[in-house]
Image (cartoon, rainbow, N blue to C red; front, side):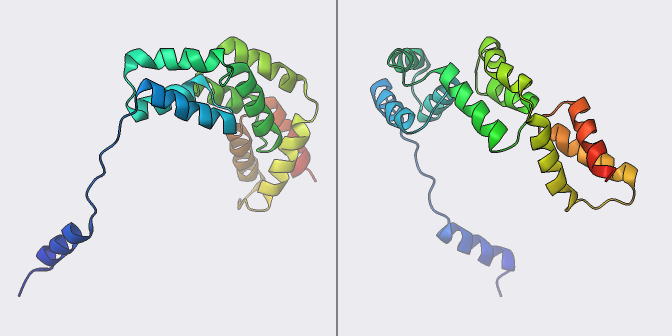
Length: 177
């Protein structure tokens, strides 16, 4: 009688597909692919560099492709940052800190991030957006007491990227009801 391990090993080797070889792209192919992608949706320079790395474009040629895309205005970090900020603040309900962190991860310069986030800092509705998110979260939070509830709501608000003071004001209004 065969052991279970041998049978499982034979079965796995027959059913496991062979790993696919990754095809590399030339700089010209990468430029054409990125032009198509950028025509459909905004991309940052960081996104383009990451894609070229995964496509295996030689490192020496990546900057040339990126320069061609920016000169043809397929990629514009300012435009990308504005669209990203608008989407994440209005649709996802993110705060300024989380948006800034994610833009920085995408390779956007600090000056551009600060310029794009300036209107968001002055926005009067950010506290209202946070309060709406916290009220929704309140229905799913299980807490033994008020202290625990406030802690969980605060962690949630901070994870969305809101400032501590704004978060505490909204939490006080919600919990005191």
